[in-house]
Amino acid sequence: MRNILIFGENIVGLHHLIEHEKLGGKIDLIYIDPPFATGTDFMISEGRANTVSSSKTGKVAYTDKLKGKDFLQFLKERLVLLKTLLSEQGSIYLHIDYKIGHYVKILMDEIFGIENFRNDITRIKSNPKNFNRVGYGNIKDMILFYTKSANPIWNEPRIPYTKKDLEKLFPKIDSQGRRYTTVPIHAPGETVNGQSNKRFKGLLPPKGRHWRTSVETLETWDRAGLIEWSSSGNPRKKIFADERQGKRVQDIWEFKDPQYPVYPTEKNEKMLELIIKTSSNPGSIVLDAFCGSGTTLKAAQLLGRHWIGIDKSELAIRATREKLRQIESDLFAGSPDYEFIELNKKISSS
Image (cartoon, rainbow, N blue to C red):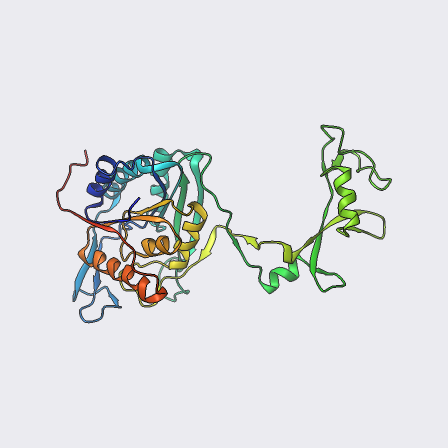
């Protein structure tokens, strides 16, 4: 599989991927950050390549004028094609804001199936604001996460424990200075196989409960010093902090946008790395059909995935190609190889 960068309307590009590249059912991960139906133009100031401007002096990076039902129809046409491209183990993450996002969720429920809805992720995008308005300050947007089926690629994401986490979750310290906590070794319910209600050190599990594992395993843990006995003779298993991979990632993410973006609405690269690591494997194909400055493509390249990017903005394509070239200077690993395709022919979306 070769990497592909397409300059053109993304609905044309998606048809090209299905009909000419034969990639239907081949893409493991889709991330898209479409327009948010804001009704505005997004500009890049002349002579200040790293500054995004809302003024009318400069070049239009992209136009976001579709609103309401027109925007939802625009998005629906593309989501239907994206579903065709998605593999059976694939996932799609759609980045949107709070003003239109709940309507988009209903649309995605229809296309991908409400049973395949996984998360409405809250992304903290900025510091608190003190603007006067009727309403609370907005510092977040949302990412809607769906899968194609019940068995997607899922590489459990973990983040390191903070000092506060360690003190709270692993409050005990052993003679060697290792932090740990303890958990019960019995669980609700009677045994189903007769092997988990036998005596352990002369004890039976409490009434209506059973040992979580076999008595033989409990004895092995006890010999290894992994069973802690309370003063009343209640056994519990030790869980050491240094043997855990960290804590699970929750559905509130703090990935603030770059302070000096090279392109309007440029997203945090670490956020894209998390998504790509979690919902794709090395060698998977990652698609961004609104690729903007190419952050998704760069992250996919550095993580050993194949990638496809599409954008109709000349400024976006220029920014993407420059970001891909920077990989060589940043890592001395050589610029990524990719095919550049220009599609100017428009295609009916009906």
